[in-house]
Image (cartoon, rainbow, N blue to C red; front, side):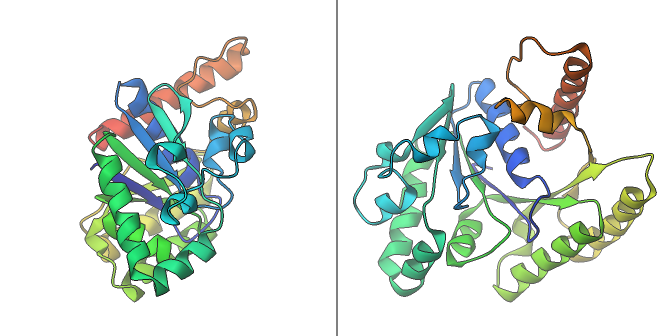
Length: 261
């Protein structure tokens, strides 16, 4: 899958964290990786401690290329070796242009086609809201990963995501993986949620692979508070944090292996 998207009609389930860690993992394998933020909050920058780069320049947002005011290279923001990000400014306004000006849609698709010649992987990070931009980017994705929080609201987000695909005539079979997130084996609610999700996946996305759930780990927030990714070298950590980060890395590596990365 050259273009991979993470999506869910529910915020706070870990979409951005998942796609950010996947991008960094692939970059450390020597792959050239581009992550496109389709979210005005540009939260993906926070995963890499690069918040300052969101506001460092005000003329290198994705919309500037679509409007013909920037070149492809102008949009790229390097945050790690082999890993680049693209930020957005106003997706609502961009989606309106995409709806009423067909030439804009053609230019957006052409942008991804050109980037595909230079990058091994293009990953797309979405907000929980949806728009014409969302539809187009999901259409051109080679595979979609749905991240689902293991609680009642998370399950509702999964159902709303499936309904969104149906309502907008998007290909359900483009959903390749379902990633449950927030598992705690000593708590009943996540275990019951996983059982329910397993049945829903069989019913609504039979061609998607339900992956081993990611555990609820406080270490994720701890390292992100320092602007570190799970695959960064992190000096001066306490033994507890270092051990938990190592466990997180292994969990992610096992997950990526099951996805074929």
